[in-house]
Length: 223
Image (cartoon, rainbow, N blue to C red; front, top):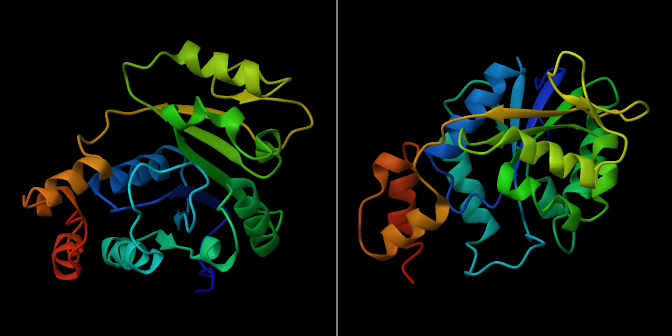
């Protein structure tokens, strides 16, 4: 799967296992795309998540197929199977380096990350180098404090300061800026969906059109 040629110059990057993709993922992508005036959002499913999972992950092919069903009618949303082309764990730093090589230096990348994951950023491979390739958009819930974002940045990214207009954190000599975006999330998670399917409950209202039927047809999450 080659990268689309019409991604534009401001590109959101949304990674995850997407097991399964759900309406919350799409709402987040829509909000980031609108808030940061992005040309596109690239969904990047993890082939081999580097952090230990507490469940048996679905095949990459099935997760990719569900993403395709979810996004095929949505303008500006695209998928990359880049991580499936590499051996070993799917580290974000490797993905961002590959995207930079493929897309060039003229584009702006906006790496979307949830607050809970951002709190663990210091455990990521070569995390201090991530900001050499991309901006960060930290998606937080309204009840999560902005000072928490600042604390994580201060402890993990040396030299970063709040911009004078308070729009972001930035550091002289580093490409990436760090933004926060406070959103009321859609009340759904992939783990909850898997549990609902395992209990025999319908999930069509919580996932994009076609994904529920795919889950049923493939017998996914029937643990």
